[in-house]
Length: 46
Picture 1 (cartoon, helix red, strand yellow):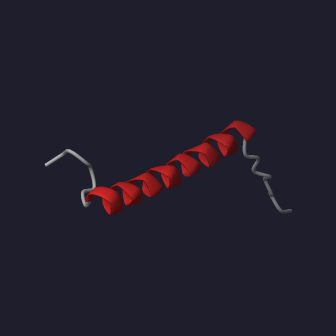
Picture 2: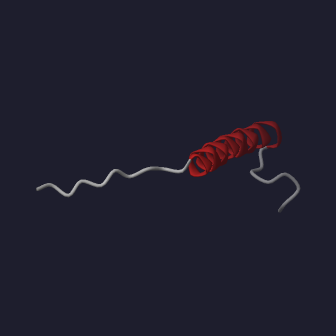
């Protein structure tokens, strides 16, 4: 007898992780853009 359990992932968690990943990528692109234009990671912060 095999005791196999099927794991289900809730749709809300998948959507939340997708949005989180996209915002993380957006933040990375913003940090790279700020560094390329100003030469500082956080512009105005010494």
